[in-house]
Image (tube, helix red, strand yellow):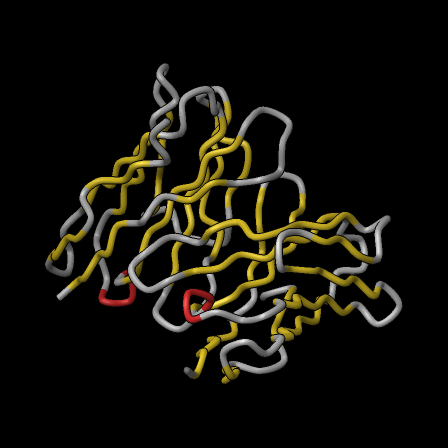
Length: 110
Length: 112
């Protein structure tokens, strides 16, 4: 079975607002987590990653937060743009493989 | 630099047939992984190959097999196709010792 999962399958956000996408994982031994973005007809694209010894990591317009106490991961996108419309997956990395959740479809309203 | 390339991009096969999907990793990447993504779901791990040897296998039947060549390209083979094998098959490559995986655009397989 899957070891990671997302709370909501869809998210609609107004252009310019901030987006928050949530993910719960079950394997407390996981030490590395990644967020991927997948646009229609394309493969997953790496967004940002975080190791289990960190609580927060920032990239360009994106921030990933990790709460190991409740095994929760979130992706924050600042000033959401139309190009951010896609399916977002969190993934847990264990040795040689990635375990993905089902994904959250983000739709940006103009 | 070219990214991960997969061929073909689309494929239609009949139940019972077999299929071969191909992947060329990013130059310098020695590790190749295969994933199956059924519509509406996240990718599921099938295989990982490193230096031409199988390093890991997911929960897939023996109808699925793969190999990696000396130039680090890879093939995924599926025998006795079932309707349920219809999916997007993704290949990902990564550098030695690094966890960041770069995905290709996938091969869309439809079994009829």
